[in-house]
Amino acid sequence: MADIIYTYAGSAYMNITNKCPCRCVFCIRSNGDGLGSAESLWLKGDPTIEEIKAEIDSFDFSPYSEVVFCGYGEPTEALDNLIETAKYLKEKHALKIRLNSNGLSDLINGKPTAHLLEGIVDSISISLNAPDAESYHRVARSKFGMEAYPALLEFAEDCKKYIPSVKFTVVDVLSEEEIERCKKISDEMDIPLRIREWIK
Ligand code: SF4
Image 1 (cartoon, protein in one colour):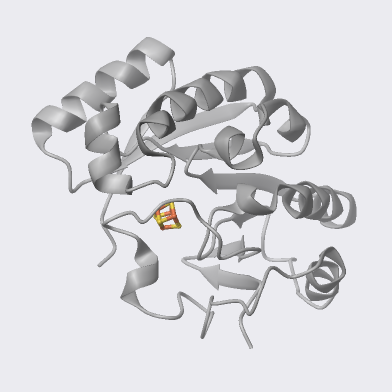
Image 2: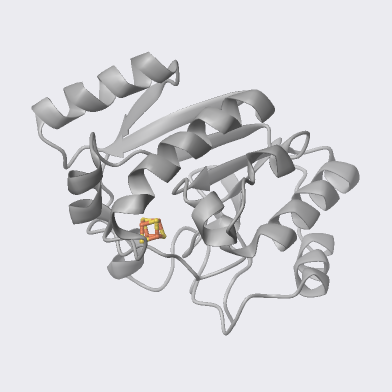
């Protein structure tokens, strides 16, 4: 059975969907079925909110102060469950909520969505991936094509209004020149950039 909750490098994670509009060249999903404590992160389908709550009720969160929504899919693909689950984790365990996202929630859900995360998500890490729409498309291979990158930037800008901590990430597969251009975008948008290692 696939894991909805797993632990990895000292943190607890929620894996609530395998859906994603991208096919990133560095996606961790192509490395294997599991990660950390999870034997498999491949779900049979999106779990229902009742199934997620049952998993939460049987998991010991006492070693953790924060839970990260990040699994083998984009959490905002299951936006209603994401919101409901984060509320439940806050109410029941007073946990901080971090969301790792590809930033395409508005396109995925067909509406502005950052405001829906207010008071629910404490920090968000958005994969910037590239310094422009064309190179983004080469790396992320999103089904939204050239629409994806500007929508990601707009979503990130919106998140600053509703989420206390907003960060961008890029994977260190980019060239130095591309990373410099990503830093410039981050500076202009006043969103810190974290360069993360490619987990192969
Ligand atoms: S957005 Fe995340 S889950 Fe989706 S393909 Fe890219 S790395 Fe994988």
